[in-house]
Length: 421
Image 1 (cartoon, rainbow, N blue to C red):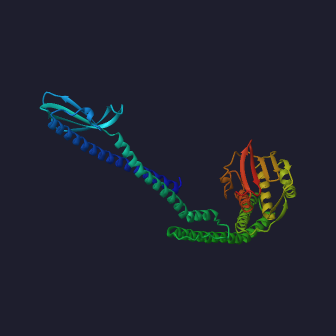
Image 2 (cartoon, rainbow, N blue to C red; image 1 turned 90 degrees about the vertical axis):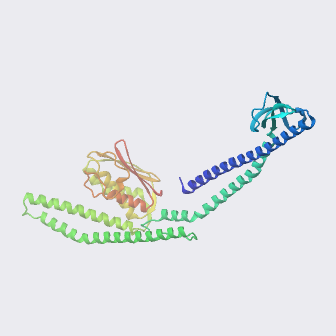
Image 3 (cartoon, rainbow, N blue to C red; image 1 turned 180 degrees about the horizontal axis):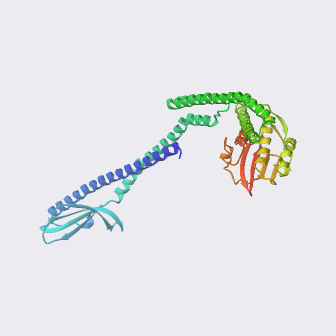
């Protein structure tokens, strides 16, 4: 849940709860005030009944009252002269329906006789007055709260615009690009501090990343010369006739290890060049012609492993860096050949918008996420673990979408051109 939504939800719950509690308490207070008014009125009616009986020496007629109902009941003696007030529902003979009311009950002597006297007053009109008062007071409060809620919503959205801009700039920040993190202008101190902190961190990250890339490039360059010398010396020694079988096997293993180290060093240099945007020149490339050219280049390797190649090739031209596209093709062919089995199959499909390589293999489905990580490889693989990482990096630089899946015993790599990842 977003912070803004969470804040609004909490604010709405608190406001609604507070409004209900205040409305309930207000209604109860008005009800008590109404009861006190009715009780005073009932007491006044009681005094009138007593005074009428004292002056006229007769009981007042029950029908002689306009707004109350008076009931008399003879009793043997006075037992309790206290006055009791309570709510009740009664039949109003004047209005001819049941309604709520409040009554006063007491015992008193009228004309020398003990009576139980009950005086009932209707609460209907006064309840209507209470409802009108509550509506008159609470409706403006509700409207005011809604206005405040809408104003608060608009203001908060406006106040959080700098944060959203910072978030957008963070998402757009790319450590491989020369552009630094874009700062924003804001009058809110907290967002200004956040912006400055993110800017400082991004500058430090870019600086550290450049140093790491520079170190990798320099280290790889420095290793090229001694590796070339080692390969040359080993090649000379392998051609010597003075070595016995055991020594030749040891030298062959050393030559194989240094060759693998040389390939690893070249791959690291290539990744550094891609990361540093050193391959930026673009031109129109005929993928159909390039695909046939690369297929001829790898023909010997394909025949050596007795692989069958099925092709479905359409015409397609793209505007890209030739070196990167050639690297992409070389890695796809090399991967499909090296990880295939003897007598296996390679299928190449070139459509007007994508290129797909499928190959059989003894390996099961690979992790579609880790497969493009650097130095990730199967235990049985003799490669450097950088081929697919280079493929991924090339696609990122050229804004291509690279995907991997495993269907019907075949590993499938698909590149969709001009579709950013």
